[in-house]
Image 1: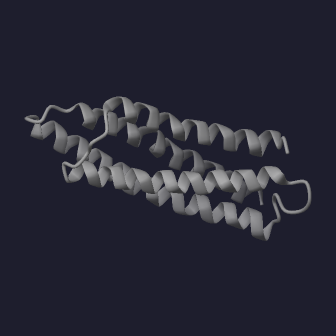
Image 2: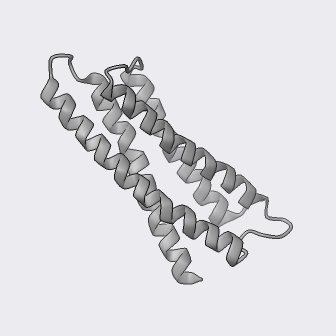
Amino acid sequence: MLWIKAFHIVFVASWFAGLFYLPRLFVNLATVPADSHAERERLLMMARKLYRFSSLLMVPAIVLGLVLWLYYGVGLGPGNVWMHLKLLLVVGAIGYHHTCRSLLRQFEQLANRRSERWFRVFNEASVLVFAAIVVLVVVKPF
């Protein structure tokens, strides 16, 4: 079980590293001048590659988490409210991941209507979700 837990942590941290940086690329894309096609295309290429890589990291993170939860019983039983909250946050992180894809498509189609400031705030959401998940798993306050 410890090997599975270790790899789960590695994949979750790696997945979230992508979620930390992808919205930062959106901040940069939102500030690119309309006539700077090369810079825009470079940032879009980076965002596409990062999204694909993060998606590949998300899958084993979720699978290994499910193995820990359903096969090894981590977080099962009475008094494990922390696990329910963690699962809710994981669903939120998956939604955030897919929202990033939607935002990337908007940039690809030149349809972005959000400001640089909005993307800066959006960028912080993944950090807050990650911190909350870590606190719930380590401290188990509920």
